[in-house]
Image (cartoon, helix red, strand yellow):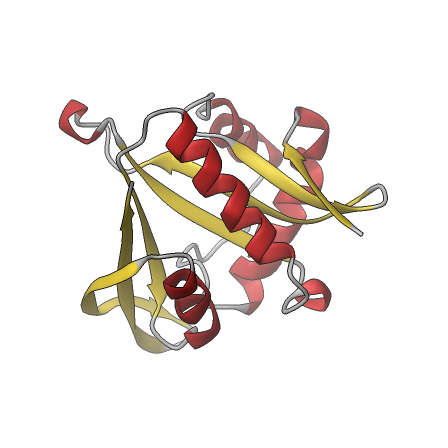
Length: 162
């Protein structure tokens, strides 16, 4: 059974392993080099009650995570956050992602966020479909903005307004 809870520093190693796997093996992130624990600690510390990191667990194992991060450091965007979500490959398509999205949206709404955006590499039709089911709308496509694995990649921008 999947449980969802706020991430703690104890989860950071598992979060980092999941993210680094996505960096090395997927286009879900446009990061190209695996993150160090020092880099990830800085990222972790940049989150707060308005910008939480949550984890999905089965038993004692973290199988996925989601975060709401600042969309921009400009103060006019203070009520906007960006959703990120990563699930271990062997647990994808089994509902953990939906639980993480649902919990992230509840948290965002409860802390007064006005809108949440998501950037998705355009070939990831599954997450685009899942986000649509949560009420996100596609607001645009940025063409050929990323290069990874020798390919130019498009990014779909999606948004939900509370």
